[in-house]
Image (cartoon, rainbow, N blue to C red; front, top):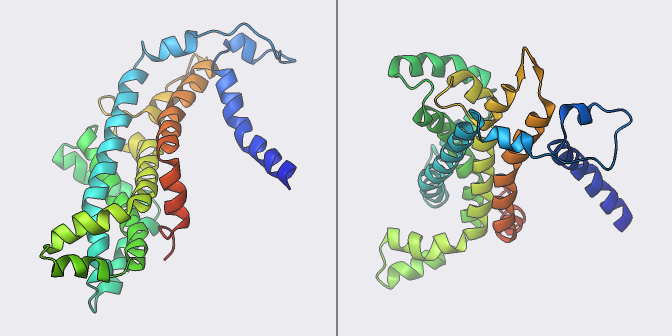
Length: 263
């Protein structure tokens, strides 16, 4: 059983290791047949990334993803708490309407967003990307955090209210610290959605707000496909996600297994 787990882990890691190794090769070395296990590594592909438009696109991705994650949690967490504690007759319809935005394919929203953004001059802007990612991430936050709050006993905040705390103080000082694992898991998924998005960034940006996944495509041009630079760009795109996931790995596991995805 352990050997099978190791085999599955190696199969899952194989594409990433292949991408990493390819990022240190020249194009000639990449297409060498048969491939060599030992080769002269080069950093030219990474050096080119930071002298090209990829550097600005990488910064754009980072800004948009962090801003989207922060705003999604800032708005979505209180909304999930409110829907969990104060349900009304139309509460079920509201949650289903929120979930509908995740069910529809992205292409259904693209043309309306494009036309509205063109009139509002939001095309090729970072706020424009943040707004559209926020629209989709809010439903994710609400649907992940609401079951988590459902599992927390109401007696916790009621005891705080009896001691003189306001409703907001009860949420901020009692409920929010207990929802750390759920917040971590939700934050990672929000970050991943904004960081990995290619479709909306391709349609709604040109040069100023271009994100890293779109910038990597520019290495496929009429002169040929620069596989070494594509691999280096892909490796750089993976790094923030790996670092973020490693930092909050303990909370991520607890959040995903402790109720954040139950619903």
